[in-house]
Length: 266
Ligand SMILES: [Fe+2]
Ligand SMILES: [Fe+2]
Image (cartoon, rainbow, N blue to C red; front, side, top):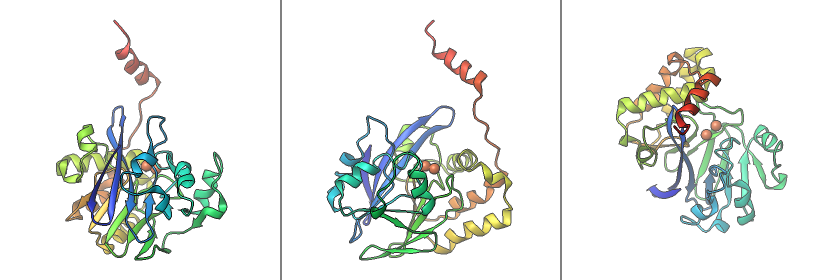
């Protein structure tokens, strides 16, 4: 994992995973350097990752006050309990459904939970963070956030894009990929991660994209895309194409066996 600070108020904790056939998926968690510091998601839980040690590069973990869990998928919860232990004043921002999903594996301590629904705001001392439901999501607990002071948007899985190489997945700006590459990767991810997108009423869906557009974000920090800044028109317009993108079908058993044969020693 590596860390960098593309915005005065935001550090990125960047990781990635190779997904066979798709590319290299960036997996980002974030720190908002607010008066009451906010960690947004906590990475993957693989044994060779140390989320706390990575976080310690950008803040003393004991100072963390909020852990905004955009949703409880396993690429977002890896460091959650270690951070709760290390940050005694931190509370987990999630939804009723999010807390419920967590309770099927390891329950969150309820006195450290803060339930927040899309449309509600959280005061973190020097700014308010507003929860919103991103247009694309893969989990019913998903709540992204807008920082009303800096104009920064944290979109959870939405806008994700598997990259062609690890270098691109680790890039500090989405512009490292060409616009065409980015568009194709975003549409692939939309079909993989939000397969329901092919069944939606497109005008209703366009309205949900308009929600982010109206906010006019200065930056979009997605869990699965290098940070994006500048003109967001293209990123947002690509979402509008997602309902008619190619449907994704994963490899089946025959394809898996063919793949495995490629790895067999001669
Ligand atoms: Fe997810
Ligand atoms: Fe994710």
